[in-house]
Amino acid sequence: MEQTVQNLEETYKSILRTFLNRKSEQGLYEAQQFSKVLLEHQISPEELVSIHRAVIEELYPSVPVEIVDSLDLLLEVMMGYGLAYREHQSLRDRQIELESQIDVAANMQQTLLPKAVPLVDQLDIGVVSVPANKMSGDYYHFIQDENECVGIAIADIIGKGVPAALCMSMIKYAMDSLPEQRLQPAALLENLNRVVEQNVDDNMFITMMYGSYDPRTHEFYFSGAGHEPGFLYKAGRDQFEELYAKGLVLGVSKKVKFREYSRVLDEGDFIILLSDGVTESRIGDRFVERSEIVDLIRKYMHLTAQELVDSVYYELAKLQDFILKDDFTLMIIKRKV
Image (cartoon, one colour):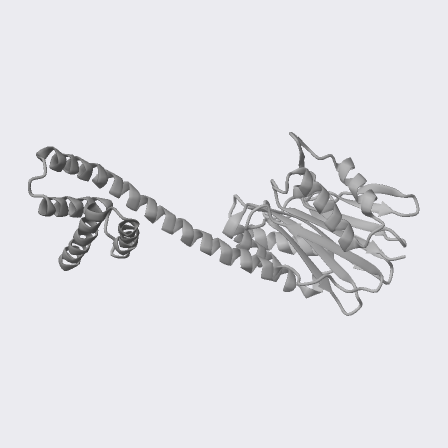
């Protein structure tokens, strides 16, 4: 290290002498390049001031004592600055490392989401899910059996970041490990509740709506665990009704029973499932009304399911200047005409 400092002193002496004699742009350029060398060798600000003082005294032995004293004062200032600067660099490095870990977790989240919607002759399914930040607390899942029965889940993990991503993976694999109950909404939620209650921290909870559609009877069975109510559109009456399923959020109590509901989907009917990030979209200083969401869906319901959810998302995001306050997930399940 001592040899390195001596070499840097000689280099700096040459740069400083050249600049003081010529005051050229080349001298400034060499100084800028030298700063990179200082960073490379992790030379602190106070060490540079010390080098500058030594070079000045060597080049100008008769330099006024006041100038030397001023450099001593600058050295003291730079010592405090250097400590603060190094602490800042340490915090920045830790932040970069944390952001890298969040990126990994966010990428993992994406692998947990379905790559595509189920292909069912009688259904048109569309979904849009956009996180407010890198990490999302929203989750959705599809299951399809050999009879084209489709299981549909939408969940909101109360808690964000890496813990939410880990919780999301647990939910996915728990659902996939219950094949005999995957199309029985109430039974599936009861099993998931036991898994969550045993494995998730007390300050994290999960809301979920889970439904299954049977194309043989056109019935949609569903249960809810404290999740945002959806909607059902009945084409014959041209009316929307709330799709509410009462139930306690997952993870609060070990022994919970969930009620199962059912609705028949006639041709042209469709189910709307959503997270609270949709209903908590803001227009100025107020939340959007559920009736306004219905009006938007009605405006675009002549489109395909995917075009519909994309259009509703765009309208609501535009109202917020495309800065979401919460994760946004909207799903449409249409029975084709």
